[in-house]
Image (cartoon, rainbow, N blue to C red; front, side):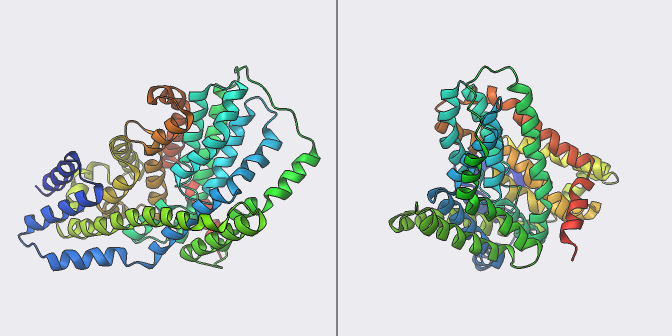
Length: 427
């Protein structure tokens, strides 16, 4: 009964066209009705408590850092640096896109923003060089979804807050899976682009490469500084967001001098709007999470999954398959908000490490950003590349399958996540 009311009220509100945050609020009221006690005071208190979280301060800072990075020329220099080293290879611009995606992921944590920035820089070059545009756009879209996995990741922050899991450990645990996603794209690109007849850029000498490295050094050391600071306990994830903002501003405004002060106001407004949407969504999700716990919904889900509880790998396969299916219908944030409070008690009961689950759960949700029909990164890339969704999907499939294979390899071999995490977190 509880599951039927939960899903019915949520899906009904969504089908009526309500924003996800308000749909979650409707779901919370429905669960209160089930318990026979609607208390608006409790609802308002829980709404405030949901947003009143110190770790959530990392979100506006990392959102702002991403905006400053793109406006200040950091993204452009990462692409230029990669071009000097691999632009002359067959399919070289594809390798540039993958390298830039990984580097940008370690700075901004936003899939759509990274894909848009890299696509705007590389799609015109790839079109002019004779690359298949839908395939190129598919590669950049698949590269963009590495951002929610590699730290600093807004998705990992949100998961950590809702699930009460260490954000620092989630950040460090996401490094290897994110790099594996990048490697899978390299292998897939090598396979699909091996016969393309495209214009190959001239090989650059080491002088040009050195100049590109010197010009881009401030962009290249940014992710190293953030991840190194987290590893050695110099700052918390929230403080890392502040460091990223200050660094991106100083480099863009005073070193590269591509960030005029007059641009700060629109950048701050854009970041504030994005942050307000995310934080309000988290606040309403935490109300639902509290009522989900009171309604014993996780226990009912655990009962449904009881045939798989004795086999952790099989249970993870089932959960990941469910999330893949849900991700085709719901966007990243709704899937994260709705399923986290439902699945976490099941994960703990089964004895699965919450950090390990969190990384794979976020990776799965990130891949959902490039699954039709809802994936927001798909819509962004259609606009950037000026192609239809059908064209983009034809070019995307090899890269989507490559990332799904990585996901299920990590389900089969949890040590690929846990062993590097143990090394990274040791004193």
